[in-house]
Length: 169
Image (cartoon, rainbow, N blue to C red; front, side, top):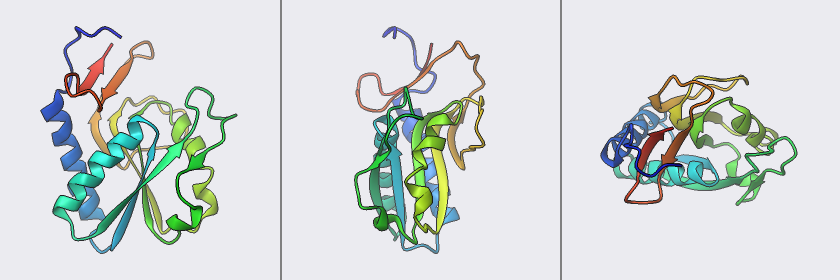
């Protein structure tokens, strides 16, 4: 991707969106003692880390992280792996996170191992919702909703401090 493209959300704005989502998560789950953020590797997991860090600053509940590994390029054929025993999620509020919600395909296939566990509630959070869902997936928490064409690409950079932000190509 071009590196000279200005961001549509800079680092400060992106972190502000994540902070706002943390407050929304707390408001919707204030009676809980624990929240589990299950992030789709790698940017969704990084988003989960940042979201968890914000939540523990404002809420008295504990917050755990779980990594979901899936081949985003071929999710139907991919094995979905959790970095914890599935029983760890039992009877807890789980918030699945990813960087961008486009068709809903990745979220849908990432649910495979979670659907066999008696969780308390499942919610979803994304940094950017592009609004092109082809699967019955809606984000409960959205940092930025952006209507795009199918030819456009959204990049959420959450690792590189120099380019931290959201880019549209």
